[in-house]
Image (cartoon, rainbow, N blue to C red; front, side, top):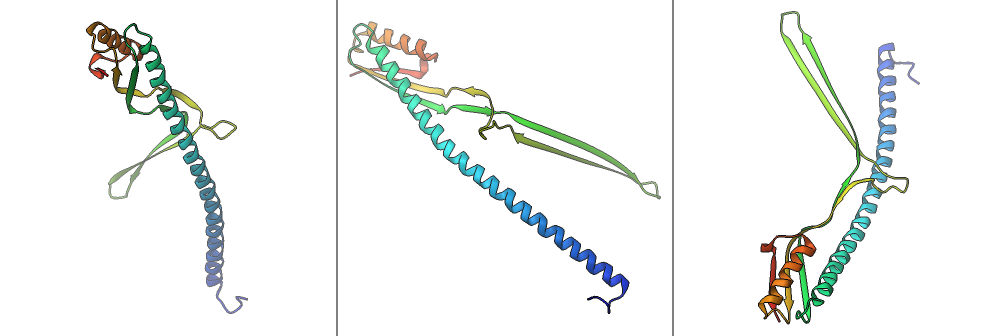
Length: 182
């Protein structure tokens, strides 16, 4: 096939063919990795939706529990509560990280010196056998403020009891609590 080419030209053509082959194999492997990664991202989006729904349900449950306990206070009557949050639940996943640092010093014949420092870090999220991330720590959502409306809040003693109960139940400071009468 390449009979008319010089030996040097044949080597160049074979080298280019080999390089092209390696590039094509690399692209095929990379595209498969990209597909797998995009599928993982789709799973993550559906999991995020489920987490948000769960968080909203938990927040509503917390409001219901607070309303229930506050209505048990003598003289409180009917109670409605609203809790606002700064941020949702914080989840800290586990990572496996590898970092390398390489320093190379080069000297030329004229006495010049050059130092090249190369560093890289590789972080991989650790997942369980079901492809779910391993969680190191979960923090509950931080409460921004609480608003309570009660039919018995006209009485200053009842209002003070409601105020103290909210602070104690949610472990928040006084400036985050407001009590109003119905």
